[in-house]
Image (cartoon, rainbow, N blue to C red; front, top):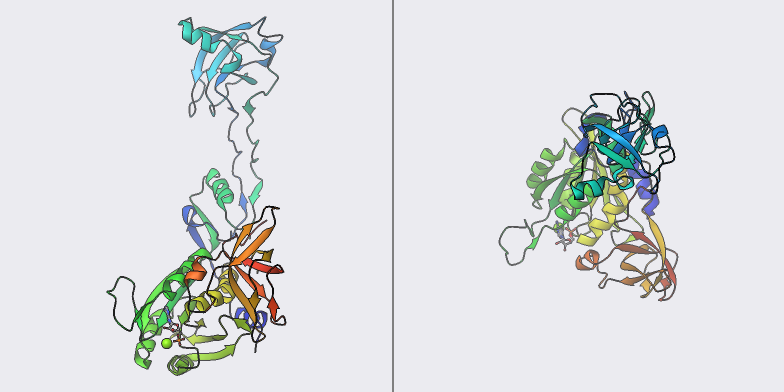
Length: 420
Ligand code: AMP
Ligand code: MG
């Protein structure tokens, strides 16, 4: 039986990084940047005010205080987005708003709070002059051109993962698109005569196809583009037809049909269309796993991951193998799932020397440590205990049991996969 790591390594050897595409910035979250980005101009592009107030020459405010304010003549106003229409003359001030371009020859901004602005406004006094209550130092409240990024500087490097901050920086450079490694398209084929699509009326003897949706959600969460291909029945014709439409994806995922009972159809069809290996992986849930490649008409090949049918097995197997494949195709390093150590409230039993992934809810105890309690029935068909879980606690294959009160490693399901 293969270990999880051995199975993953074999699987990943069939994948490569996808080509680069031009992506709309708004769509690029989580993709890997495929170009160095050099600032074509300074950011900010011009010196601007950090406050609402008065642009002045700092020297003119020498000695200003509450007791001895300095009065300056107000010669104009400049709002954000406008350019000043004259330079600042000695002994004067220009009213200025946050983000507005600082007039030539001004070297500081006095915030309204440090002037008699409010008193004047309330008493209906003249706004032709302003009294300054504070001595300004040069560059006070002025954001210099290029303070953030200087023209010609490399702001972002190829290989960086695009997060909100990076995306904002790219927008600030004026780009609406960015070159990034393409997202993998993952076709999801569900198999089984018992399956109904959600939305259809309930029928006796049938269950709803939940796997397609939980797997599609995981594909999206890891940055891929899910394509739900519908349900193939347990016949050669039906499965062939479903696969035909799936072949142009970057990864074909099937669910069910790989356990002992009925995998013959899936296996026959898949081996007729490429090659397939059925593996037993030393894990619980999700021992039966199929992996192979399917031949496209043009002679190229597409990897195929055959997940077990049981809903929790399908999800746990996708976490371990599908996630890694998507990361590789997207050009991301093979980061482990974020893991913590927690004191178990409930035991994890390991019956047969496989690595057990137990559905748990991790919480903070009074001492700020982590504890984990079982989310209930651990049968591989019980999806509700997966929905209640925020982590998978691990009992290693060579340990028969982790008792309550002992420490287990927990893979956190929804923690960010990339922490830098
Ligand atoms: P199989 O691998 O076909 O033996 O399926 C194992 C178990 O998973 C059976 O109880 C199936 O009914 C169930 N199952 C298979 N496919 C799905 C699916 N798409 N959604 C929910 N349950 C499924
Ligand atoms: Mg079946």
